Image (cartoon, rainbow, N blue to C red):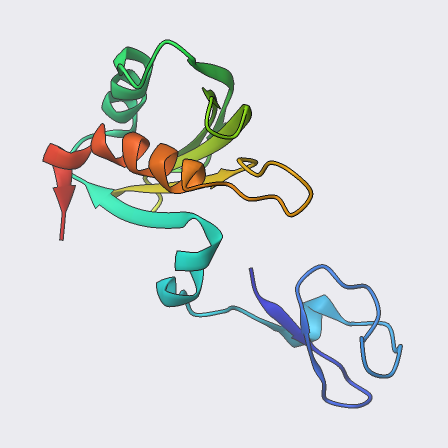
Length: 156
């Protein structure tokens, strides 16, 4: 996601705001939108990872469907978005029960081939338990289990 610069005060606002967070002026996305450069270092704390693989989007989908992450893991939803020029993006939502948090962790896998390479993004969330939402590593564990499916196909 990008950001938007306010015409009135010059404040840089995160994508999604309608009004400037500093002065309240309506933001002009058509005129002042800035695409963010991707910086993976910020995402380590957010249970996010991105990598490229040497297989097609369809092969990656099949690997997930045939994976053995555990009996308590299930595909909860899939959505294939097709773009011009044979490009597409597949979003798969996985859910797995973790007894250590007595709850479910959700894994979102985004597979796209928009740059003539197959890119996979994995995001996990929801593993927190108790008043303070301690996740006891369940989100990291699930993300690593999903990534392990593709380990032999990851390219630098």
